[in-house]
Length: 418
Image (cartoon, rainbow, N blue to C red; front, side, top):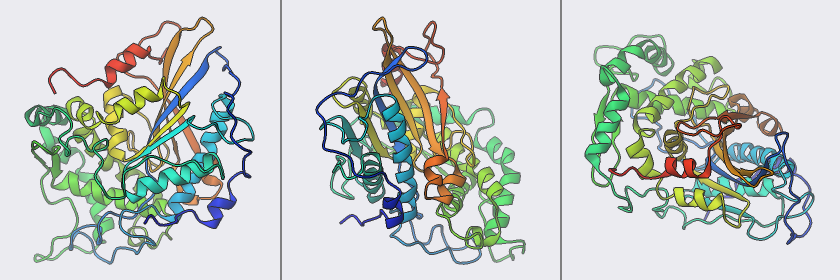
């Protein structure tokens, strides 16, 4: 059974109970450009969790015990739920301003649609966000039973999409660029050694001991008929270590428990580059991104034209990176490297129309700063940033950065030769 992750602090921060649901559509509102928002879709990463394994990394990777967490490996923490509640509060403000949510009452049945993956962290993230978005309205997310694989979120592994491993391998090799992974290892060597000092301390390893992540050369593990390509070696280990340290910091752990007291907020932000680089190589190339996002693309398309005015997909960093790759968009949030999907961060897709009835798609990325996630409470609601995104291949005269619905649909489509 899913644990109850919303703390009393998080619940107390939420707005008062809303009135009974109204069957009437909220009044239409236009922004300063005369555009009206019709629908919004968020493709969102879950909130702060512990590492998915205990210990977080293989023995010998670091000196010292990894810190303890209040929940099972990979589960949303109470602090993570509080930060997600902050996002729900902030999103509700934006949706009410746009006329997508009614003022002072529960949304009408069917106007808010949330789909979550079957992991505890994604189910709990959806629950925390919905309760903050519309307090005490009883909104729930659709999801499979916890820990049962959902093909919507893993279509390659479930065999639900055309998948060409050779094409995927070729795409990630192209993403590595001239010199391949060896060139990336060379460029990131100084940062990797800085990460080694956090993991292992200043004392040099003995001849019999291997500590840190920088020693092994990076390599690709080829795709399989039922699996995506992966990394091994330095970049793989650095990405994992960087994310573990970031999650420790985001959880609000005392700094003497974040990286054994051997790191800083500036280090955490710098190391985030490794996590973003893994996605740049493995998740954003189009053959991989299109196949892995193929189960969610129809939900996005339906959300932009169907009965629900607000659609949220509660998924993973990989899902956000896949969509970022399909759209060729880029973002940067304080505390994170460029394109690193933040806990609770989301690509936001809005459908709009103008006074002449013409339809448009507007894109943005919204997330809390890393400092805001760490602080929690109302800081988590007030430290939300929204970054406008421009998709490659979109062009709308008079509306720079926007897409037409047709252009957007083409970007989501599977390639002819996956």
